[in-house]
Structure formats: C-alpha cells, structure tokens
Length: 131
Image (cartoon, rainbow, N blue to C red; front, side):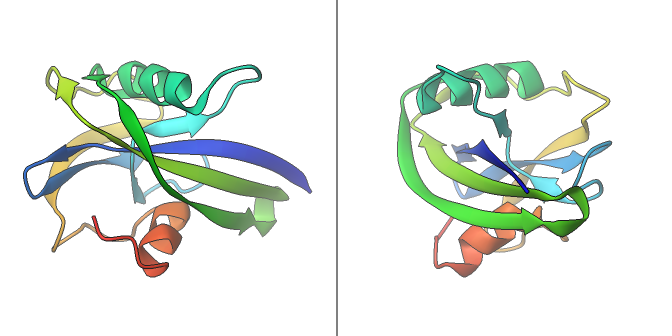
C-alpha cells in the first residue's frame, strides 16, 4: 500500500469555510478543502500556499497547524496522512482554476456543511475539530 502525505487548507470567511466539489480523482462528488500532495522537499506551509493558489486563485497568509487525519482508500491501495492547516488570512476571490479537479468553490456555513464531505475532512471533524 502506498503511503502519501496530503495538506488540507482551512480558509474561513466569518462563520463560513471554503469548500470545493471534487471531480475526477478519488473522492469525486464530495466536498473538500483546497489542498493536495506534499511535494518532496516542500514545507507544509509552502504546499498550502501552492495548492491554494493553483486550485482557487487565493493567496493565503500565515498558516497554522490544526491536526491530521489518517485515511485508507482500499480501492486505490493508498493511505493518506492529511495535515490540516488554517490560513490566518487570504486575498482574492475564489475561482475554479483546475476545472478537471473541482467544479465549484463555495463559502459554506460551518453549521450546515454540504454532504458528502471528502473522507479525510469528515474524519478530521469526527475527531473533534471545530470548524
């Protein structure tokens, strides 16, 4: 089984959080955070900034670690350790920059999240993380 490290970026706007509906890869049809694979030699903060701008066009400020989830995707024979970080600030307006990976970015009320959530995010929330 292949083991991979992912980074999920929590971006808040008041009581709302930015979520995108995934397309094309594992988790298609679920709602997840901006983020992706940590590249070799890249810091978690560098990954968070790179993935966020690649996917949403947003530039994020400082990021702070929030925790992690450990998810096995049996059908892919992959285990993901997803490191979650929260962006202290952002500039710009979210846009779909990778239409083959995400068809929509939406500011979602933290008390009424769209379903289904991407498994690593769902697991993180079930561990007790409060958005």
